[in-house]
Length: 165
Image 1 (tube, rainbow, N blue to C red):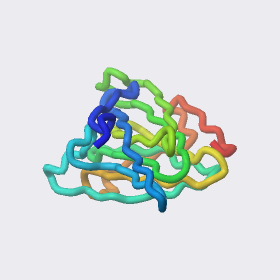
Image 2: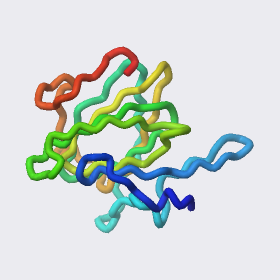
Image 3: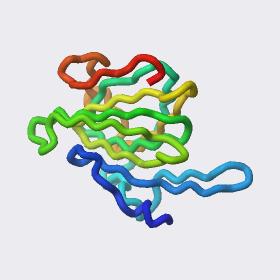
Image 4: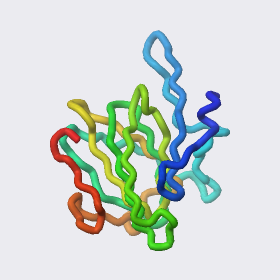
């Protein structure tokens, strides 16, 4: 395990953390790590396994805004490049009102991003190619605990660029 895979750093929003992920070059294409024992951001599976899913993001499209009341997100971007924006709208958070913008994707920005409950997030593909995001959630999808806002909702102080983010 790469030493960087055992360390997570704060991204400016309380509970939102970023961890470097390993990329192992091989002749047929790289092997990409996401989660393994000892990883700094290993989800809490004490309640059982949640789920892993992939979401493709097409150039020029924005998937925002969403937050969860119980589910913790663990995002990695193995293909393409994504701009991910977080907004802390939690009234009891020490970082309430903070907006954080990150680029995730290979090769320079292959990270695992943990998004805690209650934090709004959205993402858009950067450039001309689709991006693929993988999420390892700590609980299975439950539509009753997810909340959405329109991409241009005035309660979130962020303006998405619509042209190929």
